[in-house]
Length: 243
Image (cartoon, rainbow, N blue to C red; front, side):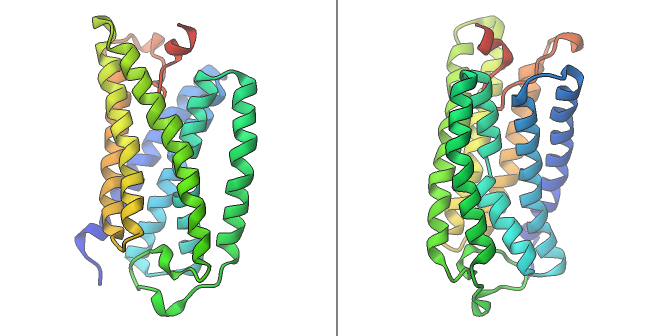
């Protein structure tokens, strides 16, 4: 049965698409910085995940949509955003090594999601849940992948917030990174709730998360001339890398 909360992902998707375009436009303007591409890809995938949720609400459960939901959300989730932070804050070699470590894990997990049989008896008409996979061991991949995203995305934002809190002139960036850290944390909490059958908690967490991250972005660029605005790291800032 469809409830009002099931329509929240539609709004989340629209916000994510606009946000992804803003970040991508920043990269296109600069024509440099792989971190910007990682972030725009991450926000876009965020929107893909919520799109599958909205699609299910409007048109009902679909096996292809379910598999796309699990891969884009539970497996990819915040990894591209985290990888953008790694590219910004770490040396190129370190970023390449971490990419080489996490990419095969996601690839293997995605193949498993595509191959697992579906238990039709557990399918709900307008609701997505990982419980329908017969290979339940596949769900063990997501905690590892999401921990990676948590460490570099949320951790990077928290580190940036601490750095920017030391000067009054960068107070706006302190606030912005706090908002980003909290916003990035919420989908992970919502994802944990889905393991206990509370998929609706994920829908709310995703919506609140993208709103807070977007607000964090706006706080980071507040009061800066348009020509000199640097896109805030969804975990740090370009200025951090040069400091």
